Image 1 (cartoon, helix red, strand yellow):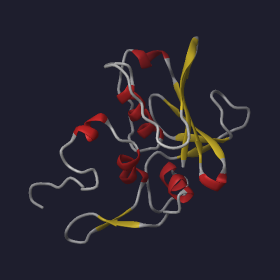
Image 2 (cartoon, rainbow, N blue to C red):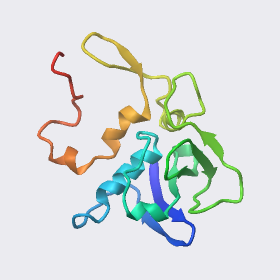
Image 3 (cartoon, rainbow, N blue to C red):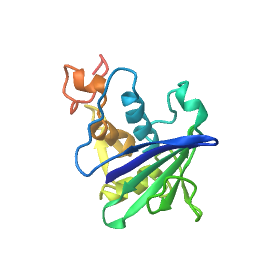
Image 4 (cartoon, rainbow, N blue to C red):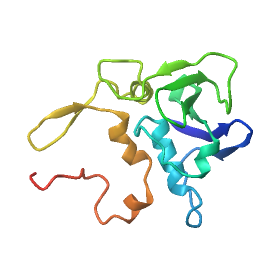
Length: 174
């Protein structure tokens, strides 16, 4: 799975675009320049979160387009309204309204459905139908993109944390 671009578009405004390269991408810059917002948008587009942070800058945009390469399946573009809801997936790398109709992908993981963004991405990386142990009692949950996302998109808070990102946070009772 490779990110290609992230584009915000809206009526009567020039699109805002962020390009990615193969390999590790590090977004850096001065305070309040959109670094955290970019990582939150990626999580939003992967279905790991259901809302974008409300900022003054986002008000003029109504759409987000994220180009991705899904392994051997090729290039696709995910579309989602900035207000949230289900996504659409389009063939190819597009940065605005494509000529073909996209397929709707539900935003929330459901192990019994194949029309979710989580299923589509897990399928591309060969992890559909996998389970993870949720706690010390051996309870299991189906693997979702939401579970994996914190290992793929690392925030500044996670980088500065004194605990390892590989350990799941536990409640005091555990």
